Length: 123
Image (cartoon, rainbow, N blue to C red):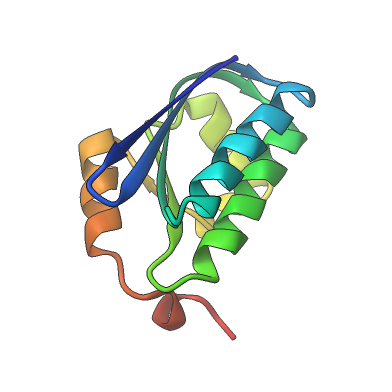
């Protein structure tokens, strides 16, 4: 698995390539946590080249979403999710928990204009 990060304005873009198995999911979780520690609570994850994602990878995304949404205007947005991964996200109920865009530019625009977490996250 390969992870690259790039800051675009105030948004962290994380691109993931390859297989996110239970071992590699730890690296993904650390990349997501690192963004939060640096004050980047709007995160776009480009998943276009993800071949496989284990439940540990989904857990890393879910944890990052919870942590981001604790911050004002924080959110993890998924971009370019392959059909097989999208189907798995639907099975675990994550399609309702994440905003998903078909392109990275659309995801970045959504992140820039997203409402405050107080208005979009229940109680």
